[in-house]
Image (cartoon, rainbow, N blue to C red):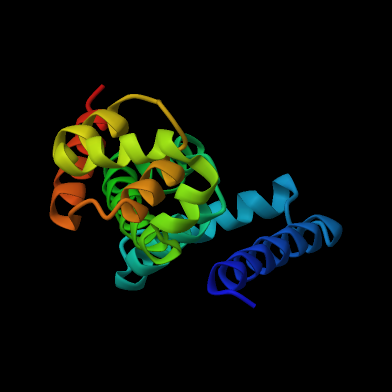
Length: 178
C-alpha cells in the first residue's frame, strides 16, 4: 500500500469513527435540550479552571479537522463562557486549530494535492509561497473557502510557518473586531 493511500485510509477511518460517535450520542439521547442545559451549567462553573484551556483547544482542533463550521463553534464558545472568556477561548481555539490543520496539510503533502488539483494548484502554490502573510490575512478575513481547507493547503504548499501564523493571527484577530 502506498504512503498516500495509507494516509487517506487513516483519515477515512477517523471520519467514520466520528460518525459512529455522533450516532451513539443521538441514539442514547445525550443531545437533548435538558442534557445540553445541564452541560452548559456544568461548563460555566469551570470556565476559569486551568484545565479548561486545554479542553477548549482540543475541542477546536478536533472539531475543525472534521470541517465543523468555525462560526458555529465561536458562537457556542461565546454562549458557554460569556463575552470575555468566550472571546479569549475562541481566539486561542481558532489559532490552535490553525496550527493543527496547517501541520496536517504539511503531513499530507503537496504531491497528493497536486495529483488532484493539477496545474491550477501549481500556480496557487507559487503565489502563496511569495505572499504568505498577506494571503493568510485576507483568507482569514474573507469567507473565501472553508477555514480548515485553506489552512491545510497552506501547510501542503509549505508556506513558511512564521508567515502563516502572522497572517492567520492578523486575519483572525481583525475578523473578531468586525
